[in-house]
Length: 519
Image (cartoon, rainbow, N blue to C red; front, side, top):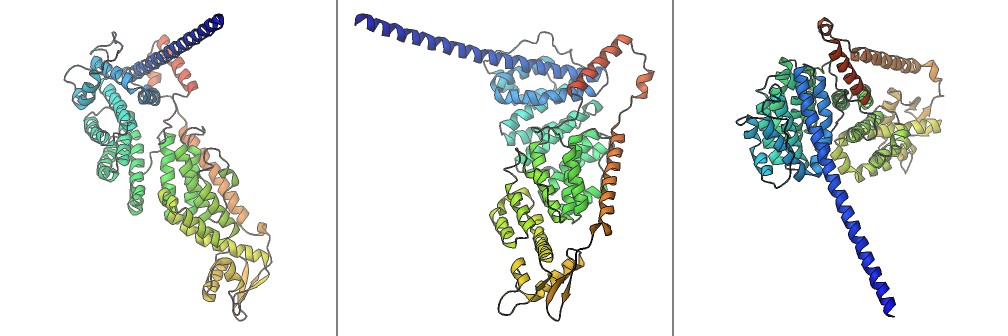
């Protein structure tokens, strides 16, 4: 018995030792992961700053575009480990800028807050106040963007609104062309923070002022970004008249290199045209917006969802039925269920079902900003019902004695005068091929004619040709040619070769592309 007890005790001790070792290994792995995360963050931070410096030294803004690619990764790192990584960034600020620089006054609160944290931060021994003297304003704006994103992710909207206002006032004093892309980023988050804080209308005049200055300075990137921000403000507050006037007085820059901004612009224009009853042109713009959006499934999911909803509604308003493949997307499938019910009601010409869908999803449609457009689809449901009647019956009565007429039952209308008016309008618009016998009060359908006798095939063919020509025109405009000044420069062969290799590598990795962050 004693031997058995000893064996049990030894087994318990062995289990305890194994659990202790497992806990130590887990803690070691977590520590290593944190260290790796800090190392990656520091590398991304230094790479971004070096790219900014290279953009100033070589006078090449493509380095700025490469730097912007690292912001998303660093934003996620700070969001997950802000207590560890923010002191690192504050330490780098104190190493880079000399005392008395405006950044210390603007970010004083956050510099004091994270200096006091007892965290080990790396010593940037190779960096001092003179390392990045030429690129100081650009690096300053870079740090402003990072702090704004930190506040945005922590939902400190009031602080972010105050800070963004101070930052915008600061960068308007820095008249440097190398800041164009970074300033556009700041203006975007300036508007976005105020929208999240519920004060978007308060910055409308400021955005209009920024847009005017961008046009005067020929700042293409700021023009495209702020143009979309102003349109977003107007549409969010249902100021469609102001939006139409603004669009009529402005134009989207043709030499803009940002597909993301162009996609947003096309979506906003499509929505305005849909409100103005120009459904064909609206459908064209929204389709182009979806095609210009990132084709990666995980990118710009919110934008593609909103654009798809608008595309479905506009197609219904045009009298077409959206393709079933729109509702089979795994990511958007559940979000599009209410719109699928609307499409089903329109396809079947079911007035009662359409009314039920409108009642059940009233709040959702209001939140999406499409309620008024969907209300217009009610007429299309009636037209579909009349089309089904026209195909099913050669003759159908308008008035029945003692009960609603046959047409009235199917389209949900009881008054004979209303039925006659609706049917006559459908015949006039070419929805159905029929005649009304006013003496005997019935509708008689005509025999179906061959569609190829009509001009519909020609219109469809013309539409396809126009799309191909537009695609060709866009491709020609997007072509890039080498700058003539580069041919005249007497560069050393080695430096030119290194630069070409870097650009080729960046192009293969996709770092020279456009900003696809469609919030």
